[in-house]
Length: 172
Image: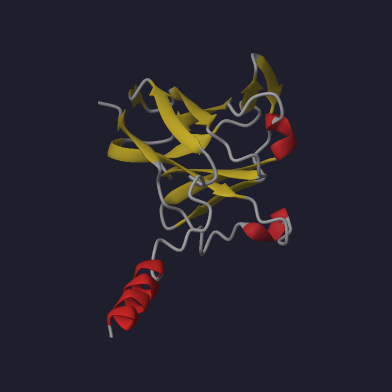
């Protein structure tokens, strides 16, 4: 009986757990959002910087979500690896249900020398907004799904990892 209790205790102790497998895995990457300025007039622009760090050296998807009172300014996206900024183009620039999504697919090769980068874009205010959220989400790019099908505006699979509140003042 004593041995049976020891065996059962050992079996129960080995069950459960987080189910994560790799205890060092922390997700796709850490992302930090910086928006300057956070209060603007209609027609003005804001600079949005996403600091990407702690990458897991997989291909990444960086998703930005923001209210439809703001619009992406074309050709303003850059990504900076080791103080060497490059032009970037969003793979998706779509709107649904009053929110816009900009989606960037970033190959793991870009992080060979450093697991940090800064993605920068500019947004322009179209109309007033009492308060709204600019949000960012980082995901691992699934190599089994082509990038042109991996993001679906109707199911964006978006969970904000960082957010900044912005206000757009209308004409008075």
